[in-house]
Length: 326
Image (cartoon, rainbow, N blue to C red):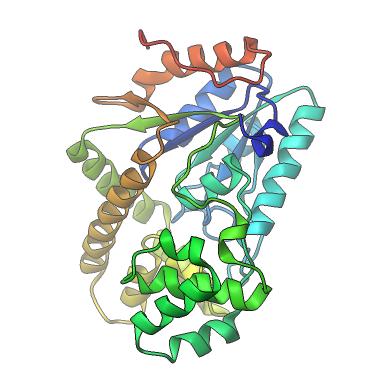
């Protein structure tokens, strides 16, 4: 185990990941109902926003009253909540849960946020004015040569044509005065983790169907009215909040740019593409132990409970492998 991760000994906390509409939140809630010492932490960049409960599919008020939840409805949608703040909030929640003698189930669909929490990533700050100056230079090859001069190690890990990553590395290097590579090995390295991670995977056509059915329920539950309330007070959504699935399409409908049916179809298509990107992101992490479902997420409940109980009995700091029979 790396020195960094050794600071967080394995304490029985479980991470459940999966694409949107995979049923991971429902599984976590049902697990908590079966085990009295469970609190749930949402690792979702959108569930943190108030007034967006329907569109972000946050647990219901009744579910939150029944099971302690963390990092839900904590900031206004007009505000940004930077990743380092998110990390700090999760670590605080984990400490409080442990002090109460309970265990955490972390539920995540936002890949970067899951990595930031699981690996305690060092997230460099943003320097927008420096970034804007860099972006004024059109020649990506020139920027790459500049990065190679300032941080050869970072340049070795970035493709010469990947302008986005080159600009980010230069932004951090120039803004902090230290090499971008000094902030850690990056997202391409998967060190041993103090958390046990399981992933929920289903056939693509089933996930597509569940996404469409979710939007149908959300419309029935008042999704359009929720979005109207968000935009009616004149405040703009933050850059992050405005990227929440489905909101852009519903706003277009409210502004008369398309019909509700067109908005829903566009949201479904966009969300299905997002779900594929989520799965691709999580599939890169070899530490995630996958569970396959065919019809309903609850068919995996007993397996998830077995894993939860297994890691709870483990008192060492070693990685726990889910038995093959699961």
